[in-house]
Image (tube, rainbow, N blue to C red; front, side, top):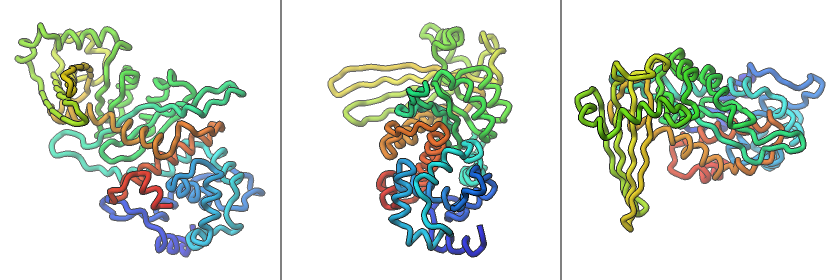
Length: 389
């Protein structure tokens, strides 16, 4: 991008980001695309790659669901766009936008955002030895992205979400949810987990995944269920009622909360115990230092009571309150990302069948949610999107 163009962009567009550097202008994001190879043949390059990507980013932010909507929005705003983009041959057509999003390699596309995302996450840590950053890893299926004609099922996307920063750190696609286990280690290798606590649900409770996190100088808190039956049974027995007297004499940390809303009362109890020397199955799990339990008891207004108990392994030994924050924080990826994608972007109803374009559009939606969440106004994500339009 030329200096003249950068000055025009800086003076016209600013995305407000409450971080150390106050504002992140659109040009500061566009600079990261300069190293992105253009996948098109040189004879067909009537439009600049940076212009096409900028239109795609802005279009998704304002709620466009695909190339057709992005092109229509750009045509409606072309007078304004000409003041901030070069557009040497006018606004790209929907076919041009579709071709670019279908040809760009998702990994290379996402890497263009990495340094920008890293600058927002920062290197700050909590006082003491507890890491500040929480990274939740979970999968989501784009339900209507199946292509029966070519024998392809719905695309399953595994995402990494910086819970406390409200940022998408990366994603990888797989055709089936069962392949999530093989994708998670690769995703961990692509993001920076140093000094962070990584949380994954029971499907990700695998020795190889734990090793990848430890190798990346991070810590983990992994949910344990029946997919690891021996480990689950050992932790369940450790926290059993008959061993409470023994547990009280061992190093452990606790936290308790009570919340009342929507006509019900939720009491939650968290216990994190330092791993005893004689705990079975200790050796196979890299870096394991503690085992934990989270109990929820719900009482409704009509007196009905229900509850559940979940178990965890951890490579760190934080305070009881911090352990509670980590366990509850994992659901941030469901509530703050996946739910927003379905409600705001209607991602589950997207019928895009091209795998690369589905992957790239999904990343743009996650990137847009990250930007909109960091805007300081108190409006909803959908309202912020409309205002941006």
